[in-house]
Image (cartoon, rainbow, N blue to C red; front, side, top):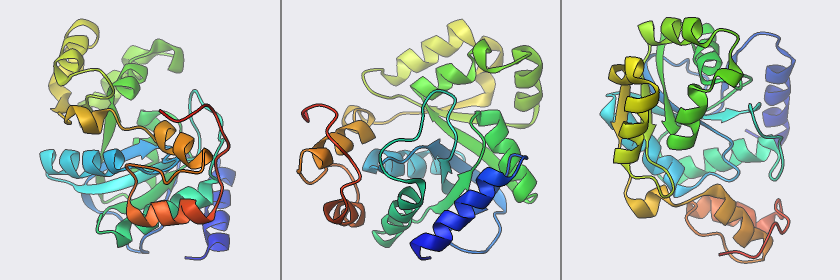
Length: 237
């Protein structure tokens, strides 16, 4: 798809008052078990894609990258949303066979609702890193957290992975102390420490400083070499 149709599709998502989703890699509807990773993909990294592949295998599901056009904590900066879709589609050319989606919902439970409304034959399971897992159980984002999560976990599971300095044991311990009643509905997937440490922030910093960003697919690196989406935040580390 050309950039203009990408922007138009995203604008239609934003204009819809209901939680809905859109698929960009094909016109085929989603069906069956889907493991989806909701993220800003600013830009997409190898860590995103490896987590997707590993989590999908753990859940016996097809992998899908879900660009979130809204976020509970962050505004949209950096690469425009159509460019992020374009980079995800480019990653497919590098052999990462993931569906490329977007949804207009910020909360995990609403993203699942958006996928189920748009693709009734799909059985979506969200994939979250440790930081997003903590937000899933944060009462600030709910009117009645117990009612919402009880309803959600009756029919759905969540795949959770370690991120940054936190080992998978830290994730398991956090669940035991903070969400024990739902722990049986959460599949833990472990990433190696080097993968868990990769972040989009690092890639943005290197691109802003004029260096080829590390830990992104080659086709994404080529796009970022041509287009200066990122300005300096602080020197790359």
